[in-house]
Image 1 (cartoon, rainbow, N blue to C red):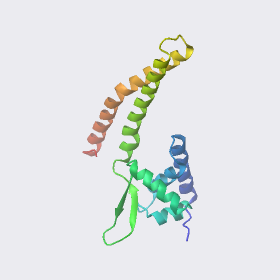
Image 2 (cartoon, rainbow, N blue to C red):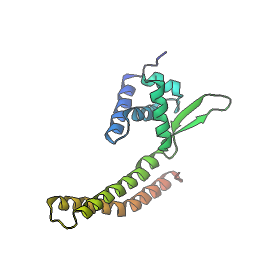
Image 3 (cartoon, helix red, strand yellow):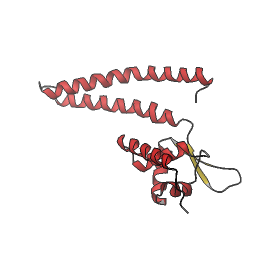
Image 4 (cartoon, rainbow, N blue to C red):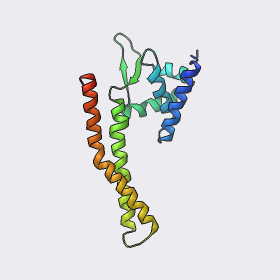
Length: 163
């Protein structure tokens, strides 16, 4: 039996899927994440995700495995039940934003450095673009850790703790 999501929830789930896709992740991974963000209770079994998202078991299995590996969802079992459930992990936003963004910043700075090495002896217009790219990402690479620490301090002050 397929569980039809209310229209607004379905739209939100699709919107999260599209945002994931725009950032280079599979749309289905985003749809799963979107569903877990708004479901009540705040966890779902793989079968519930299959029904709610009208997706294949294989797709749900593959994408949940990816999301678990990324550290943004986790598996758990309820006491006395054999069924495995999925929920958003406690540190999901830290994994999505903090670690991922810092890694991406470094990758882009390294990419620019490599391009500049290739053009080391040339006065080429693309060198200027690569220099600007390198400078932007070098700045972000230097400043991001302090920005992240400020956010963590703000969260700690707000909640009394930060995971």
